[in-house]
Amino acid sequence: MCLISNKIKFCTCNDEDLDVEELNNYWILFRYNPDKFEKIVGLFILPKEDTSFFELNKETILNRLKEQDAFDTPIEFKSRDRLLISINNDRANVEEDMIYFFKFTRGKFRSTEYNPFGLMEEFDQFKKGTFEELWDKK
Image (tube, rainbow, N blue to C red; front, side, top):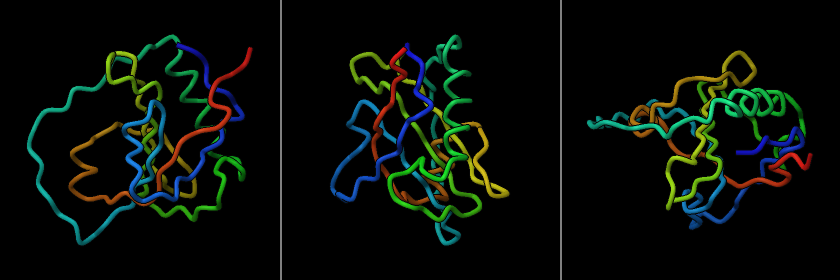
């Protein structure tokens, strides 16, 4: 696994029909929907985290999210927004996936535990996209 670039750019996809989850690398911004209350029952197994790079990459992403130009278009984030980042989402080798998950609270993103069922129960997809300058060229 490689290190993520500190120049990573979150590119917004305007194509509503594009299923970013079919891409190798993608991000999805979820917005809390107070009127949505679905009950999902099941067990979700997270991919293994390559701990040698996972924490370093998480810090790089958090630092980048603090910068005004992290996204290609301005987005007004709201409290309770959730940001899912999936890197190397290779369907043939699920163990290579790295899932980063953040919540927006008190004006900034913070790392939080990924709960896919909680997302489906109370959140709607708001924005989605891919990346430019994803990998560090060192």
